[in-house]
Image 1 (cartoon, rainbow, N blue to C red):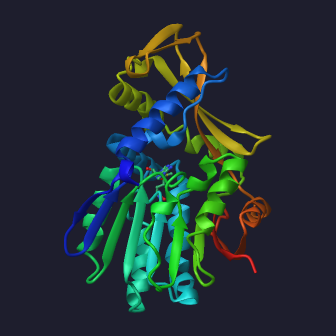
Image 2: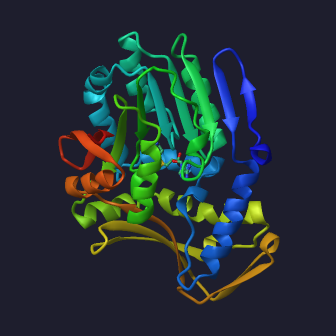
Length: 335
Ligand SMILES: C[S@@+](CC[C@H](N)C(=O)[O-])C[C@H]1O[C@@H](n2cnc3c(N)ncnc32)[C@H](O)[C@@H]1O
């Protein structure tokens, strides 16, 4: 569309398109206005991920308490080859790609079969995406990288067309858990439009388990998750000329057994009024009032199967790590 023209950078192997500039400013403004003026205050987690937020998330992935990344990597290390060879895939489309750590395991398997053609990382974080593209371009001879800086909830129609090479579309890192049930199913239905009959969707999902293990993973002893949580306030200050005092908000993370999800919140340490100049908005916080910043749903096999079925997808394979903490579902179009 003329109003969202693509910014492109092209060299021999890397092409990066950005669809966010104007659309995203609008989305942040809309989300902040709506989220901070509703009765129960909330902000969507995609706004954590500016350059600092992405770097903090990478630190979270290395924390001893945050088993999710290690468990998913363990599954991919063991299964990437079988996943890739079952479909003869030569293209990886990775939604919410972040760091290239796990993509590398799938790309290695495609490369070893002589099938690797293209990698399409998609992320709202331009810094994370360009860093990952540069790293991978130097590692795989002949690999085309077509990065797309976009919001995968709204802009999946901007993805490059499949070129006949079977593709794997991946949504790793438990990102699917950040969506409540209705929008999760809507997102999965959108993702299904990227798949042909022989393509596969790989979903990394954290499994329901002892709440103490879950709560420790989101309340790390070094306080990195707390800083990641508060980063959303720095983003609002910078992008919308806000005057949040981030240290005045305490990090809160707990398991909700009824919903079977982890919730992260920011709790005001004192009564205060925050001004967000670009929105002409004043927001009052009572002492101990909370803003919900993230949910991270935990899955059973049945729960993910029914979410996928609602989106016209079926589970073809289900792999877990040895301790059954995390699952990787391989899905295809129903029928
Ligand atoms: C939980 S992290 C997972 C990162 C990586 N895939 C992994 O497994 O470690 C979520 C990633 O998705 C990106 N992201 C979140 N919401 C997004 C959206 N709506 N559109 C595009 N990217 C998004 C974030 O920038 C971040 O890199």
